[in-house]
Image (cartoon, rainbow over all chains, first blue to last red; front, side, top):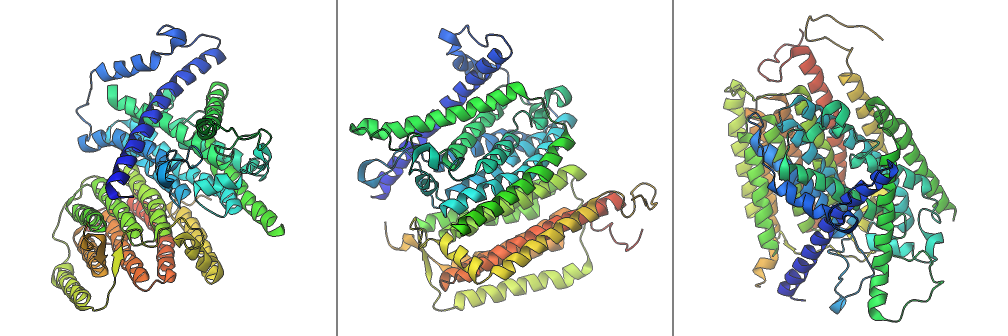
Length: 347
Length: 182
Length: 106
């Protein structure tokens, strides 16, 4: 493959994946509003288009057209940079996530932007850089609520990153690789029974990952950095119009990323839950698109769980959050690593 | 391609390091240091050390520098006032920096037989040959004991940090009285 | 694409490393804020790491990379303790300027 065709192919893939991700973000917002509405016994958005399906477009147009306020006391360079860092980091990590089986012309993979040998580490690294978006937003706003929100979020993200990373060690031990494709292929043998969450006895790790992921994406019940009732919005108090929308989009893009990673690591990625019970389809297009369907369905279930938890649980107190992270999740994660390695050594 | 990438990221490194010196506000210095560290991660990748590239981003940019920015925010450190510094730094420090740099660069330029780095060298998806495999092989076979010892070092460091930074030890800023609860 | 553009002599990496190290030393000497002085030390550590990785590439020795890994570990421990000390100093003196922190005892 020549350099030029490599660039063109990669550019096409990047553009397509970014557009799909942004549309996904818009409709995740709609999904959340609809579901939370139903949980609270109301309709949610229902006016624009059939079932309110065009609501995301209208919301986007609204945030574009709103007046863009920059308060006078902010530290401008960082104030302008923070939403870009947040959204950028949220969107980069989708680049190493495989959506389907490797198919494409000339050994070229159309369902993954880049097949990286250390894909999992790349995702962890990019997530850890995403902290700066929130931290700098709060600091540069020159507002006490924002600063409190960003201090809370930096402490929270550093603490829960440890539990998050440790919870993935069990999966990596089982697969013996950090390549996301290898991790999925290792779970592909017998359908739902061989997924890491069931067959690999990683349900404790899945629970830890779930909790740490809620904290990492600043979602309820761990949404302390933007707790409306105490901090009037937290780190994005001083942001308006498109800059606020960028933080908003970053949050939802992070949710989708976390869902993708959970799907790949614990829920068998693009493999069918039925395993080999149904014969593989003969049509080449169906054969290529079936895994993508399963992948999207699993990510959708994960997002559904996210919204469900948000509609159900109240917010934690700050000391409860820290205690839970350090005294419950961390020891549990270490126990899980020890248990998994004993199991693997015994076999 | 390798040359272009090297020039871009080496340029980022140098620009970040110089900016670190020129900025007066600690948070700007911290951000330029993050730029340096992240571009160093790319250089590691160019040299075929993919595990270190990831570790550099996770450990340095993602953990250590977050701690730095956290402390800058927590202490609300303002702009520093520039003074001339100590006389020792002027008379001994700067000449020796120049001397070190001169000696090092002369040696490096004179050195014969240094190899070249090619793009994608050592980066492979073959699990048996990958850098990750080699690193973990040496780390968990030959160097297992040092690895375990570092975990104890980190544990001690955490305990030390908690002991030093927790309030109620040492002097308070206001009245200089020793607080002795606990 | 010519073959020259495909490869970079390792001495360039070493030169970059030594320049970064010198910039770190200069920062250590001219910075007056305790936190930025500490950052200069981290810059020096990073410069040395780069030369380790370069030599590991030159001699195809993975142990050079593992040395860098250990340096990172020690740097993380050092950052935790160092920043704790900085917080303690700030509590005691209410300043971060190294010129004002010139007494052993308050």
